[in-house]
Image (cartoon, rainbow, N blue to C red):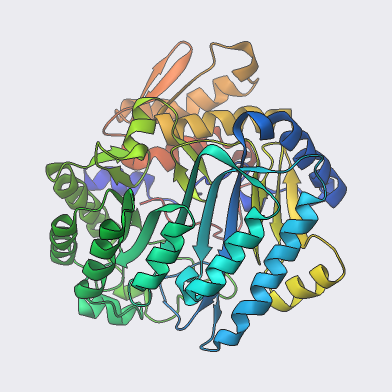
Length: 454
């Protein structure tokens, strides 16, 4: 990749875990009643045929990682576990009461925060409580995020016995200087221990998260991190760009200066180097910033054109309805989005009043639904088309005109009824999606809302 392309396309842009993106949700047309209606509609349309997905946000961490942009509560007091589990199960019960039949769970994911902050016993209590109001799909998938420093054999065995077969470990970078800057001291031996223990117990897929563009990070650090990663051979790797968003309230990204970050050119070279090294090790690039061995379900979903992307990231299967439980969680009915309150005390207070703790959302209109399909196609299949009449929209000629410059730079190929992202264009898929983002085009932000695309 040339520096001229980096300079040209390195702009602030969404990661498109949703469309419309959260800053462009229309609060004026949203109400809880509309959200509830959209979820019930989606549930009735899809529960029996495909099931639903559950995301449970477990926000507690014992220490603050300064690279993290997630909602979290820093504490060493583990007595917070039980009240939080009680609240999540109360929220799940309120959702189940909306439906005429038991939810069929196809996917379930624990995210954070640090899910393994919770004891194995409490995680078991949480799962049993969720399953007490639901049934499992024939081919279900349970997954969780584990911190290598505090994930024990008991965590792994308990969750495996409950049906979990996929685990993701946050690695970020193995260099001590980088780890100190991001306040995430994590020896290779800890990652090796949990990876090998998970495999020994029988987990079908182990994933590692690696970040490039971190403070003080160099190309040599990326090379060394991937060398150690190759030795453990995780089934999946999320190799993604550090999102520097220190303006977000509650964010911990104040542990270093802007000048400590790699330049955009150096950051992009870190990505190109990592991509090359992962390819040499047998990993195939999946969508954006993800890699998988050919034996992994994520690769197989890509080959079968079944790859999906939502607020949990890339998944090997799709459900129309995804319910997010816990503080700050986001739910998706396909027809609408809803986010829970972000402060734990407020979350508890609303649940005590038997209220589902949603505080904002968006109901998709006809245009949103069409654009959402195109952006999902680009993010997952690296192509999209409008051969079907329902995929055409009046502004399409304007969108294609915006893509002409990218076509000149060989990032996309434009055909009469479709576009395809080229290999050269894969690092710029966020920029390509931005051309379809009509809400962004109509209302350019006055201040920076998103991380840089490169």
